[in-house]
Length: 245
Ligand code: HPA
Image 1 (cartoon, helix red, strand yellow):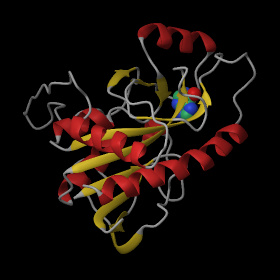
Image 2 (cartoon, rainbow, N blue to C red; image 1 turned 180 degrees about the vertical axis):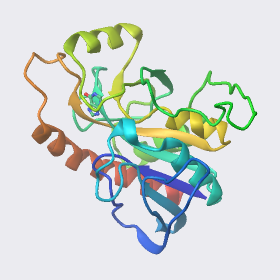
Image 3 (cartoon, rainbow, N blue to C red; image 1 turned 90 degrees about the vertical axis):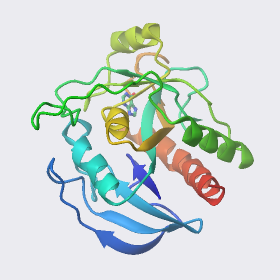
Image 4 (tube, rainbow, N blue to C red; image 1 turned 180 degrees about the horizontal axis):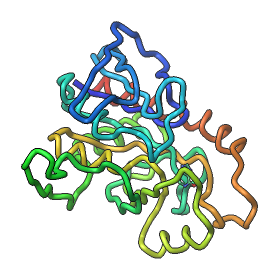
């Protein structure tokens, strides 16, 4: 079964038929909120709003371990994560979509692993390829089937937030190879591997990253506008992807 983790702007899925709300507890505490079981494009899925419903959990306070553990408890095998990002790559203007293939983690202070030594178990997952290729390919094919432009690879840079970056920080991330910046891609991706879940990210650009197009401030208004249109493409891709998997 697939899970969809909705990010900023995707607290609810269009065309989703809700069948059951589930509350789950985990060894890591409470997840972001209820898990909605239902169908999308005729397939059984679970939906979780990462920031809670209503949207009130900031990126650095999300209980990523609980969220991913609960998905595992629900029998989920494949996870599609939706993440709003600031664009760095020239093909990532506001409303553009990408399926990243790599990650750089700049987050700090988050509960980022199930192998924290508390239960005597140690583990070192391989993270050479952070995302599951089969899901990535399915999302890229679905976008192309829907005639939606998509950047088929790229480096997701995960920052801690909740503030946006300075222009110098964006320059540094660009020099590091970052193509897009978001606040929620980690530790979700590595926890997925630790918990043996397949996982990929569908990123939607909601602004140019700071300083890339002049030094005007990034406004919540421009982010909201880009999200509204980007999310329509995200929903079309998700329906197409699920109908063919
Ligand atoms: N930086 C970090 N996270 C983001 C951004 C950004 O510019 N836009 C949306 N999420």
